[in-house]
Image (tube, rainbow over all chains, first blue to last red; front, side):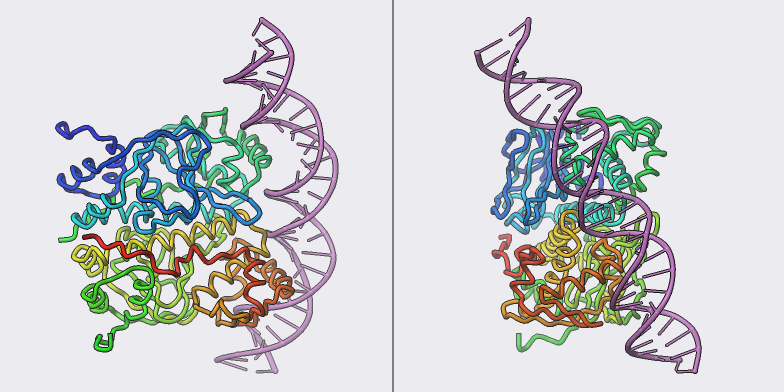
Length: 249
Length: 249
DNA sequence: CGGGCCGTTGACACAAATCAATGTCCGTGG
DNA sequence: CCACGGACATTGATTTGTGTCAACGGCCCG
């Protein structure tokens, strides 16, 4: 890997190889995918509902939310994408966007054309499988969010979301203390949890008793184990450990 | 197609080709996949949480639910699979089950080994893409359910679910009247909507004023358009129309 | 005939939404 | 440098949708 060429897609490759086994050729193929870098201002959609896209977007820096709404304008965030994530992977097989993608802070993206991804997937079964697996992990996260929203009270719900983000950001959940940057407003947290901004505020206050401190852009957790229990959190579903090497022969 | 051999997987092929374009060879490949037929009694899990599976299951008859739970035993159904669906497609790339699969009525399944699916996907890029696309539509449905649970009140929520099922069952949403069989108890509807059985009951009664009648195993809707409005339902996300033929060259 | 599952209904409790202010920070422009 | 405005956070009072508890009824099936 010392001789790998530089590519903006390194974080993305890292995300893939954390879960899937790729051959050196396949890794080179990923890093060699054509990209177009772009920067997006906070609170602006870069994919709009119903739009047909020709590319998928790797998040390099910042935070991206997938936004859906009901008919009365109620917003629901159905996914959050952090650096390394391909925020629109499914658009490769489903180019018409069924929800909007919005940068939640100043965000740097690498756009990768669908054609390039599709050709890579067709030529290298290992890549196809890795991409498919990544979609599938996203779906597992979605299912957890559903349990969260459908069957947990506001306190547990918010704690669970924060735990998930702590894990995904790799904020050392082994140690007692956890601290990470989270560039989300309380209103955005409300949109992600199906709550009200006001109630999110109250819940945050209430979670102080479980060792949570939130300042504008940072999260502080006194004791990971305690707090994870408050959020009924079990990181299993994040598939942090790389699955067995399912290589098609 | 008149000369196609008989296969229990015809319904599954139909599901795939409604959304993806497959070559005749690829279609034959799908139909030729090895299967093992099995019948499952009502309310029994055929995939348990945490289990590692070696096959995926096509629903041939009946109804399958994907069950998750919180730590207090609250159940949440995160997906429903009707005949033609591959109920566990993601297990191909993620064999460790992150939720349980339960037959909700007497259900007939066709088990297809992962190895066969993976080999087919590796040999035929069109098949890989079709499978990937199907996973992706499931994810879109999941996202809609999240909006449903997170941002709609109980009435709208239940109406939306019923509309979705009506569409997926192909219950002629063009005409005014709709009628279809739905083998779910009110408690199961509650698990799917994040509500309480008692409240589901009340909401059903309330939805009578929008032309809904539910008898034990059948749903009756007087006027589809009226009722769809009550459920804020727009079938777009079900991807009923087949997407453009994204064939990798 | 009896027992269990499911649907139905009522009274009541409570979590979260709603409404409405006020406070704090921060960038911008006078 | 200070005044202003806007975005966010915070707090209180009040309402309401949904959950909870408990009982009863119908129906099927053994």
